[in-house]
Figure (tube, rainbow, N blue to C red):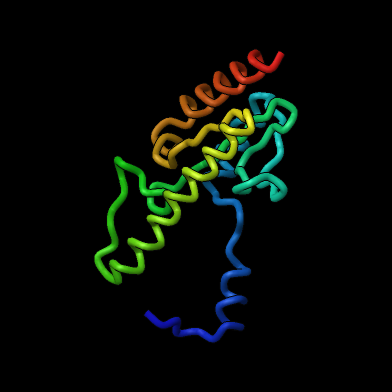
Length: 140
């Protein structure tokens, strides 16, 4: 499918897209209120993790059910299937590459699905805090 915008129009449109979603902000704020200190969207780290604690080699990604093909909630688009199959397949491959990269480098990586935060943010926060505590304990 051909793009119906010029290169300049597409660039302007894409530049308006925020790197932090409302869901990520809500989750990060909840972690911050619990006393956790971290950096957001660290561009110097592979995959630009949503949350990073470099001192303890921890990265956390908040994955959208659509863009990261959630096994529970993903709905395949009905139009332009070839485009979407290719696009979403590459997203899943990239996630696997990023996971492998951090595992190889001995980092602690956690991926949280959008639906986990939406359904029970308290549980998602508690699970994340437990994950971080375990990662810190393993480092010391």
